[in-house]
Image 1: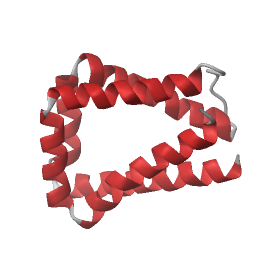
Image 2: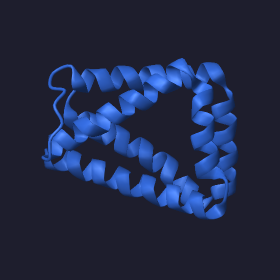
Image 3: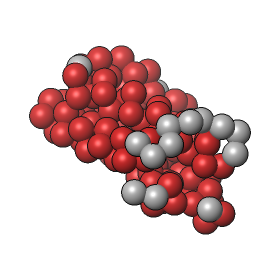
Image 4: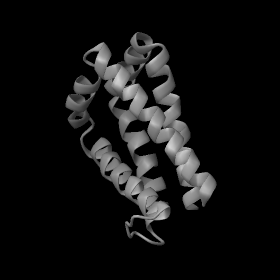
Length: 127
């Protein structure tokens, strides 16, 4: 998998979560909570993201300050998160409670996801 494809894919996924969280936070929060209660679904999604991260990191796992290096950093972070989702989906529960506990954190999470998504898509365009 190319770094450009990875950046586009993760950027779009970030936007798919961030925009609804910003526009309709209550409904999106309910959907996220429902999704995170499904143990087998969390493990499956974690496994898929782990494979995608591995496909990026297998060629060059180095992290740097250039755009490809920063995208590889995102791949490393995604791999760590995905591994936790695979092995211990209940461990993600505390993070979920922190981000979804009140309207301000939902707004911040939505904005952060949108910013990261847009930056990843822009990074994919420059490569």
